[in-house]
Length: 146
Ligand SMILES: [Zn+2]
Image (cartoon, rainbow, N blue to C red):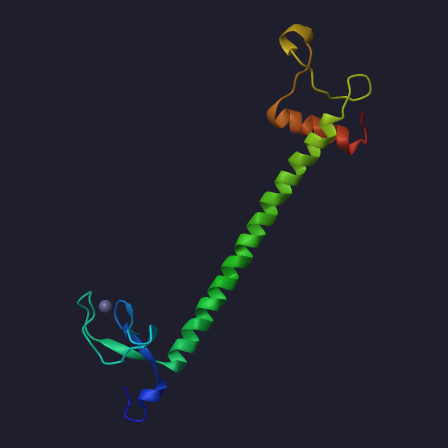
C-alpha cells in the first residue's frame, strides 16, 4: 500500500491474502433499516495463517473481474463446442432412427423384425451396434428408403 493510495482507491470491505488468495468480503447489516453495506478495509490476519489480509484496489478488482469474465467466456465456448460435437452424434442417431422407423421389409435393405428368434432364418444378417450404424449409414447414403 503506497502513500499515494487513499481509502477511496480500495473496494470497500474487500480484503485478500497475498499468499493463499483467500478473499474476505466484509458486509455490515444495519438492523434499523434492514439494509446492508460494505464493511471497512482494515487489515487482519488471514484465517489460514499466511499473514495479513490486504485491501483490494479498484484496479485489482477490475483486472480480476476481467480475468474471471475471460475465463468464463472461454469455458462457455469450450462447453458449447463440446455440446455441438455431442449434438452432432445425437442428431446422427436420431436421423438413423427416423430412417429405420419408416423402413419396410419389401423395399429397404435394412428393417426391424419383431420376434427375430422365430422370424430370422439361419444365415440372416442381423446387424447391431456399430454394424447396424454402418448398414443404416450405407443405406441412407444410397438414398434407399422404405
Ligand atoms: Zn492466506
